[in-house]
Image 1 (cartoon, rainbow, N blue to C red):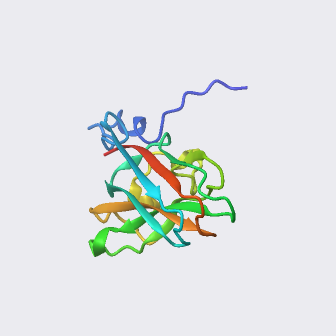
Image 2: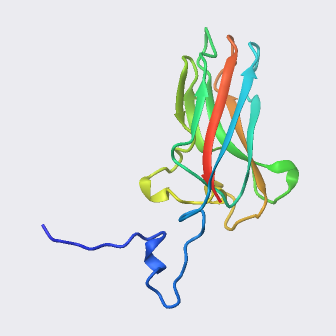
Amino acid sequence: MAVVNLVGSLVMDGLDDTPASLADPGQAGGTVRTWIDTVEVGAADTTSSTYLMARLPSNCIILPASTVYWDDLTTTGSPTVDVGVYNMSGKSDFTDDPDALSNGHDVTSAGSGALITQGASISSYGQPLWDHVASVTSDPKTDVDIKLKLVDASVVGGGTMSVVIYYTE
């Protein structure tokens, strides 16, 4: 084994430069904000139903502690829920991405899951929201809608879905 002295690549890397290269405030010293919302899912909601849960700035960084929660939403079938990003009323040129953040949350029994899991290797922590959208190569500098989308089957039982989103900007 060898003794190593490494420097973090997101924040610490530029601090010894002259002049210092400061990290984005969302990555170091930024204010953590929260967005919490709840929706009541109807007992007859069908596949492709969407639930608008948040509107966040495209440059925000969603923290890994962010979670989606759900009741048991069915007594038959196997519906799942995806978490995606949507162009807010055509305010930008990016394409809606219904499962950009996570997909396949099994809502056939009460539970919770990570809001962001797509490509969620530990090295992707600290990426801005816009970087999770496949059709975007730079920050569109707009607000982005976060929606839950019902897929794979219709809901029979109805119930509650909630999000708790922690983010910095």
